Length: 221
Image 1: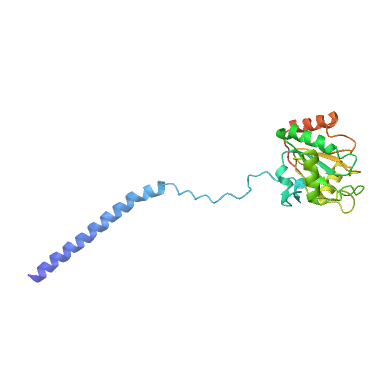
Image 2 (image 1 turned 180 degrees about the vertical axis):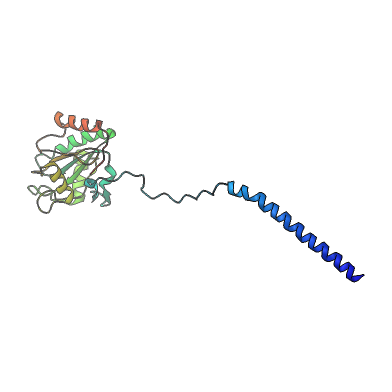
């Protein structure tokens, strides 16, 4: 009896194993096509590269200067896409009253994209001998200057700052005295030079600035 019972149990065990194997095969066969048809998981996007969509800084503007009052570094790259007027200034010059006209032009056209930047310089006639703090106080108290001003800078000769050397090279003209004016287009590539004697509110200069303000920015160089 025990042998017969064992044989029956063994047979039942083999049948059960075969049944389980058959079921497992059917499940695998049914799951296979579904798995093949399922789309591959999308990769998780990584973080965006910093600055990847930011406009490149034109080479001409790739300079940093200490701000006149605070001494904090300011990059000219922040002015990309603007029309830039660059002026070397002095506090004891016969042309110093041009500060008033520069400030008026700044207030009139800054909302449209004009940025005036002043660079005090002692290169001509030693007419900017004060400290940076003294220069800042003079400009604020006498002319209410609110456009960006930087620390005293050399603008001509072999010791000229590289920014001024680039302006001279691109325009074909170096400053000959205080309050020489450079005008840079929105792309930061084209530079025009205007002499000391041409007032900032001269119609010829204002018309040219307004023409550049109306132009779209192009790729810089």
